[in-house]
Length: 121
Image 1 (cartoon, one colour):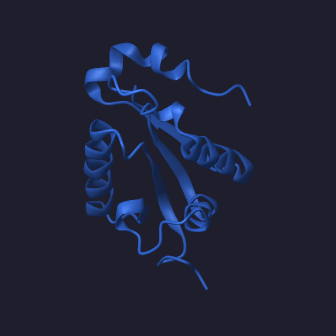
Image 2 (cartoon, one colour; image 1 turned 45 degrees about the horizontal axis):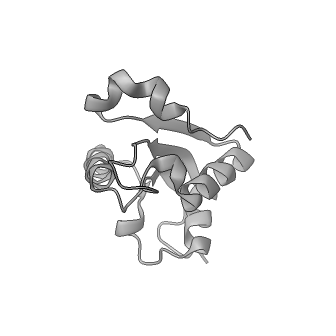
């Protein structure tokens, strides 16, 4: 029995919820995708948000969308600073799911800089 319904998803949105810019972008992304009829796992929309529930979400999604942001001046609040986000990326890699990084439009010119934080493994 799945921890969250429907039990499989088109997309899993991975973002640093402590970063207000990332949270706002993730919320807009969730709304857009659900308006298009897609199933989306996003922690704020799920009944359970435990590590087990997150793992289920990643393993049962076709694509992990990584909302990549910097720390916004708050140490430890960048996407690649968060151990839970790194776990999600590792799980997605294990399932061979598509991993799609996305940036806010205002961060486009900083793509290389922001992606420097991608772990080598």
